[in-house]
Image 1 (cartoon, rainbow, N blue to C red):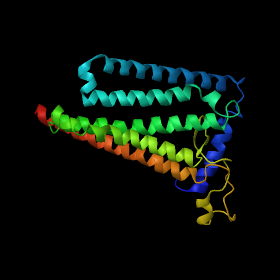
Image 2: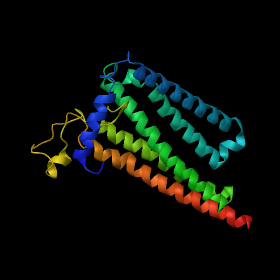
Image 3: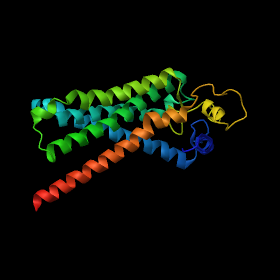
Image 4: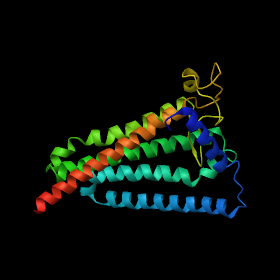
Length: 241
């Protein structure tokens, strides 16, 4: 993904290999892949509902920040898992552009919000475990721990929808150019193509938005979680000495 022309070439191959329009469902591999995807996503959605029900059953859980974050994570996971369960019916050729947009919106909202909520959970853990924050003190940060992650997911999903970035990807509808082998404005601007204007019907510069809206935050999320876990581990080791 470091260069748009290199990314486009790799993505074209994967798209042709895994696109629902080219899959032969009589092939045992493709059939098993489709079935296993639905089973895994169904189990994930079911697990999320079970966690949500546990949080909502007790009043003390409904006011505890850690449990509220878990509830929000479960909700976002349920949204994205449900969208993946029906991917065969939402993507062309079985679906249409409207159903593709709907799936892309749900996946971008659910996955990006989930990722940011995990950061909130990690930060909440280190404030309580390492720095000894009380529930009353940490509850003052509740809007930041919840509104920012959910707002990020809603904002990026809405912008993607407005910019027509949701198109058939490898096995779902997400941020993708259409046609998949079209030349983006970015490539033209930096001399990667002889064209004078983009020939993308939809999703111009989609790969840039993939990084801006998902992959860059994903790497930041991974780094934050690693640092937090390291600090908490060291804190526990020091407390045991």
